[in-house]
Every structure is written in C-alpha cells, then in structure tokens.
Image (cartoon, rainbow, N blue to C red; front, side, top):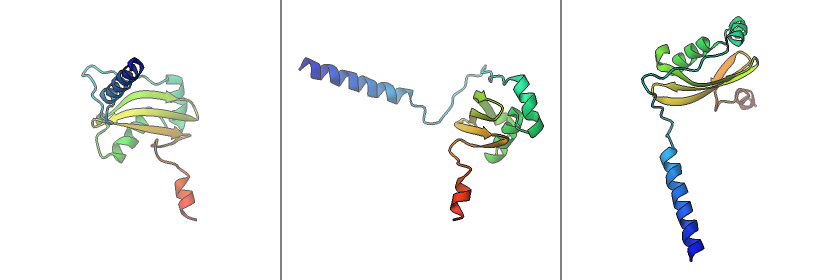
Length: 118
C-alpha cells in the first residue's frame, strides 16, 4: 500500500508540475528584456544573400501583418548554412528556421509544394 501511495503522489505531483510550466504558446517578457545578439562575423556573411536577423524580422512582420517592433527574438541558433530562431510576435511564441537564405516557419516543409503537384 505504501508503494502504491508513493507512486500515486509522484505521478500526481509530476502532472501538476507539467501543467504549471506549460505556456500555451504565449510569451510574457519583462520590460527590461534584451534580445540575444547574433554573431557579427556570421551576420556580415549572411548580409550578402539578404539572410540577416533584420531580414528575418522584416519577413516575420510581413507574414504576421505587424510592425517590425512587435517581433522580439528569444533564442538565436545559427550557422552559415542554416539557423533556428524562437521569436515572440505580438505576445505569441513562434519558431522559424533558415535554410540557406530562405526563411520559413519551423512547421513548414519546403518539399510539400513539390509533392502536392503529383
């Protein structure tokens, strides 16, 4: 009986903790939040193909019909050939990726358009 109750307590506490940490895709940023800084050397290389952080900010603003100021970067992970970005757009958390010089939402597959024509 003790093992059963111990297991039950662990399961219930785990479930309540998981529910409390879930954010439902919303992002509440403090007023003094500072965006992560991209690597300058990499950004200068990406500038040649119009794939910098500022280009992504413009892309997201147009895609979500908002101002560039409404786009706030949460995490930046990029290399020369690709990148992953977590952003907050008008209070909603979104993820974007870069493949070469093309930006897209993380959930999009660039090969879906090719496969749908068959």
